Amino acid sequence: MVNGIIIKGIGGFYYVKTESGIVECRARGIFREEKLTPLVGDKVKIRISDEDNTGYIEEIYPRTSQLLRPPVANITQAIIVMSIKKPDINTWLLDRFLIMAEHEKLEIIICINKSDLMPEKALELKTIYENIGYRVINTSVVAGLGIDELKIALDNNISVFAGPSGVGKSSLLNAVNRNFKLETGDVSTKTKRGKHTTRHVELLELHDNAFVLDSPGFSSLNIDFIEEEIQLKNYFKEIYKYGENCRFISCLHGNEPDCEVKKQVEEGNIFKERYENYLFFLEEIKNIRRY
Ligand SMILES: Nc1nc2c(ncn2[C@@H]2O[C@H](COP(=O)(O)OP(=O)(O)OP(=O)(O)O)[C@@H](O)[C@H]2O)c(=O)[nH]1
Ligand SMILES: [Zn+2]
Image: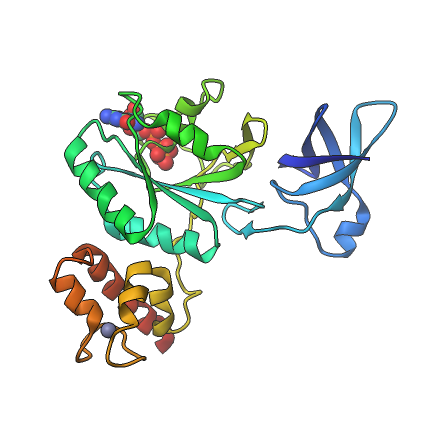
């Protein structure tokens, strides 16, 4: 028996990367009985036949994480990619992606790409999110900036790149490994893929012990897993921290009196846009609960 990791699955066949190469495998019937479907990212034990180089998945090791869209197991890290320009930086989307990644309990790196277009603004944003407590890497594929740092951050991880269309996710992946050759370009020139064609997610091997998913993570930005308004602060580190000093323990940092969070926003210690995004999401959660 050999250990490996499923890097691709198509029509009942699983491609398992082992120490001695990639083996085409089927899953034992027992998994179907247990209603357990092997996923890309699964660490598995396989039995390889002596005749040809095919095998059977005998065991699936317990998963440390499981994403639904795209379906993939054992992701350890999310690289949330935003561009400073083209498209313009959008903190609403950034904060939304952060909530998704926090929810999955992944390691998080914020990557501010296209920093060649507005280097100063990119640095400003980096400082803001670093002060909140995030790791931020500013990159430019064009200028070759931050690529080495990103590459090192991918070591010993199974990473998913997430972020809006056109920010440079594929360009960054191609930059960290020149063998990848993912399609990049304007939305208009890219082959229409995704919705109408069946796309298979695949893990790309950067080098030993470093894998990246070939398609973007969090294709749904639905936050309905946050059931109560009071839970939202758990996804905003700085609001959580300052909120401990509000007058009311149940403070939602909206219109309550003696709210420490609002005070810190006024004093500039909480990034105003983050606070506004927080209020927006709060309203959204309130509305979900009405139905
Ligand atoms: N100026 C500049 N342009 C960049 C940079 N990185 C990528 N681009 C350009 O941005 C455009 C979009 O890049 P992609 O890598 O296709 O973006 P993506 O995030 O993969 O887009 P989707 O596949 O739609 O999600 C391309 O025209 C790239 O050449 C950068 O660092 N600086
Ligand atoms: Zn408060």
